[in-house]
Image (cartoon, rainbow over all chains, first blue to last red):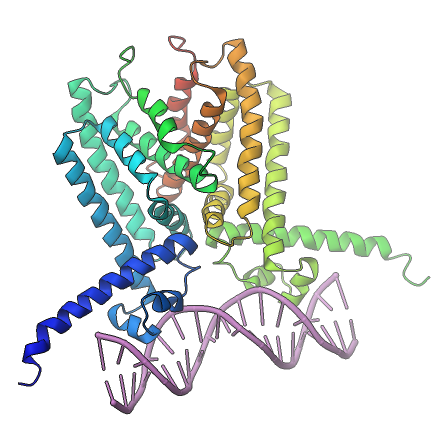
Amino acid sequence: MTQSPTRRTQAERSKASREKIIREATKFFAQNGFRGTKLSDIAKAVDMSEPGLLHHFPSKDHLLISVLEERDRADRQRYVNVKEGNDLDVIAAIRELVTHNETVPGLVKLFTVLVAESITADNPGHEFFVKRYQGLREIGNELIKKSQEKGEIRDDISAEDLIVMIFAMMDGLQIQWLLEPELVQMSRIINIFLDYLRPAGDK
Amino acid sequence: MTQSPTRRTQAERSKASREKIIREATKFFAQNGFRGTKLSDIAKAVDMSEPGLLHHFPSKDHLLISVLEERDRADRQRYVNVKEGNDLDVIAAIRELVTHNETVPGLVKLFTVLVAESITADNPGHEFFVKRYQGLREIGNELIKKSQEKGEIRDDISAEDLIVMIFAMMDGLQIQWLLEPELVQMSRIINIFLDYLRPAGDK
DNA sequence: GTCTATACCCTGATAGAC
DNA sequence: GTCTATCAGGGTATAGAC
């Protein structure tokens, strides 16, 4: 059989192409949004033609979903690593996350821009983001409940409400920070807010 | 002179057309975003051809700016009316604003979608939103300082930081609310947050 | 797996008549 | 002030060769 020595190499090359495309697509979606990004932009960046690119992803919509899922996967992985390494409480974990986010404005931009785009009708990312918030709130909920039991977080506000507020504050700060990075200091301000989550008279 | 009896009528008609176009454009920009809206959508809605529409606005970009300025103007006017009628303090004013916003999801969507789009490179609305936040923070700042002097708002956090947090919380809640209107109760949650702004031990 | 060529639609904008 | 006609350009996606 003629191709047996190269078979695995080709599969690996294909995987590498996919990863490269996702990497470059991530940059463009972050910078220009989904609708603002042309397939030709990405194709150029990966040094490939448009049909070559579409061989790996059936359509631009599919590519978007792949980008989102890959980022989400990476973020969750990072969360697991941080958690296991340090055994942080929820508040410390959020503090750490926001501080980290300040070092990756491109990725923050990706989610801020795409979540807003996904609010509009017929956006391919809509389902993804609805489910993402549901999932994040669920995880956050459990963590907060545990922290409340341990007395690390105030329990005069329900965990359900607290987690909504936390994500709201994070998202809102990101908007102002992305518009004026020098002026709005995300991590400093989230810290002020996080103090609010400690039990009253516990500072 | 041949047209003297109709001169004013035509000017009025032109103004009415402009207003109608802005009204319909507002709906589409809110529903589908700027890039997701076609001039032909708006033209159809105002029962006019595309060139007819472009007679009133030199380009789609100009139309966007007009829409944003008009909404901003209307919002500020509303603020003045509410303020003069009731002499609310800042916290009560925000409470009132968020409650009102819950009744106009389309307009909330307009600003949430467009501000995020404006973060991307080369968006015609970018300058507008940067200046808008600057202006809103400035106004909010002064009001908060006055309230702090009167003891209505905690003064262990600077007015500058408080106003950033307030807008962040409002913007962030809007995102989750727009994605799942039934699940996230904006006004109820903002009230919890607003309690935080009262001086410690003053509830 | 990647290319060239191309089909085909959409979209913003202009020219020029009325 | 509004129309018809039309253009130029951009954009996704497919066909088919290598």
